[in-house]
Length: 332
Length: 229
Image 1: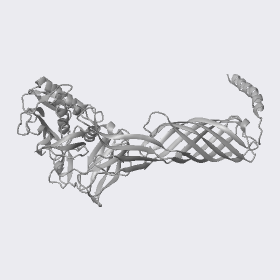
Image 2 (image 1 turned 120 degrees about the vertical axis):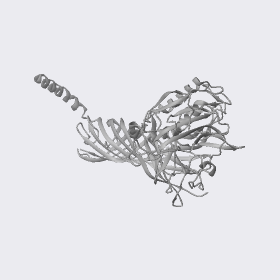
Image 3 (image 1 turned 90 degrees about the vertical axis):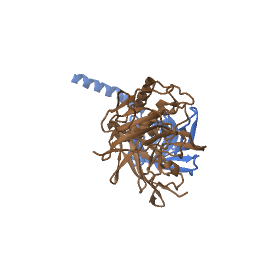
Image 4 (image 1 turned 180 degrees about the vertical axis):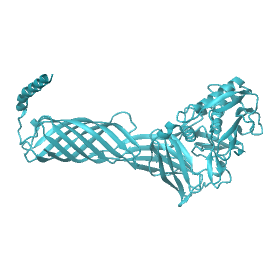
């Protein structure tokens, strides 16, 4: 078993540059020429909570918020996932102690980072062995059920970070606008969107369909293998594959949106964990500033194409995949 | 018990015979009668309908507002198709039919108003529409015309709707109810003969590929040939 420490994953940052984009993304590690998805093989996922609060949040309130956040993911019926609070600890959420710990750390140096998730993984299989989440106590926090203006909601941020802990990367299902020093969220439809709503918002306590599809894709239950389906195909531009395009499946009946990225040089993409139904596809690029929130910066992500709708309705049947969908985009 | 059953059967036959004899009054030629079969087939047409709009919405920081990414408007095209039916005459005035309809409507989704100016597109797919139906027909012999060869009728019944999307893997089922009025033009007067058949009326469908849970009314027309035997 090769143990490897993934670089810190900046999970939820304020005012960082991004672009409007759509999709959930699974975290992965390269093994030779293939990519293994990060996931917990041994369940339940056992975690500890640092027995320490911060200004405005007692230790007990913090524990309750973290427990509730895990329960949000645990409640996804179609995901074969279980979690277990092992206990409280005085340990900090630091990597390498063989304990998965969630707790506060004072990191004023990370002035745009509310929280972050780190991993130790088996680099031959992608199995997650340990993961730690810190919440930056240099920001103001709250656990008030209705949220408090000017304070970040522990549960909302924890639901996002725990999504990473379980193996989900960032979703780009959101829209932002430029403001001084960065971007502001105009709207988002995924807890895993990389930029937080304004302090005081409690929106991210509730999973969206994009999050549910993502966690179901990583931990499919026997039932979901029969009841959910997928769309796969490729994104091409002038006949060549496009890497890093966002392809969003829009359910024409429910309005739910779930996305995926084209993840190889052939433009291949798969969007799994979809409810059966009829879908339309919308494809859009990431711009340069956004790439690092989603992909390794060494990848040559193609952003030189316009937003496009696919001209066919795509059908998703229970327990099966619709393949060979080709989405053609054109240069800007 | 066996003897009692035989007696009961005999009494039914004896009592029924006068009634059948009394109903055999017909102004035209040799009418379809109790025990006759009618096979029919032909074409059908129903107009399409609007299946409503849906907006791709993102949640805003403000709880009561959404960010609209784009809008979709769904509709289904006309239903040109075919039908076959087999009927059995319980009497000269009443028959029952079972049948099957098939059509290939197109489901279209208009995508427009994109927040990032994606060109508007209409995405579509073709759906296979199957309907297994049963009906009761009341033949209005007193209203016959064209020297009795044209016999109007009223029909009502229900059906089981089965619709397959492209790829034939996603099946959606529903119900259908119909009330129709029509006329049979019988060609000739023998027990075995051909005829022309036209009918129209209302069809009410529920579910299938239609997301609406309520009954959706559609006018529908049929035209075809019949064979009496």
